Length: 188
Image (cartoon, rainbow, N blue to C red; front, side, top):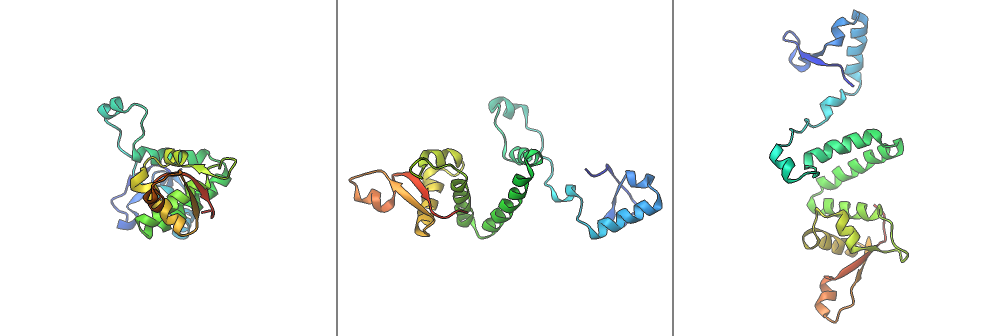
């Protein structure tokens, strides 16, 4: 963790924040710390989003136990600290892939989310994942608005195979409206 910081009026603009502990260090320790900062990575606090504001009491009473989007990110950061190193390394790779997908647009990002989620779900004995389980995992996307069109695009790309409910309606088969299960063909 970085030491507490205070504002120094005499420092140049790019380094107007100086650690309190550094004032008590000998000159050579400050020199090597400055050198390490110049060639090393910036402190962690510079790369993190600001701490979310506290929730209002009214919001807490209405939605007890619910977690806001900004709080969810904070929980994720703390969960990463407690995770085994194999999951910490995996989180770095997933984050880079998610950012790359997000740069390519909303459709690419939704496809990445669905494909990644499918790749982390255990299939049943037939090698299929039920649409209900997928919807429960991706409840923020919604069925008609998010998951179904993404699954259709992934099927067109050969990444998944969709299992449809038997229906006499030819339009249901064409539009693939009654998806019951998904079979993952290609991993994310």
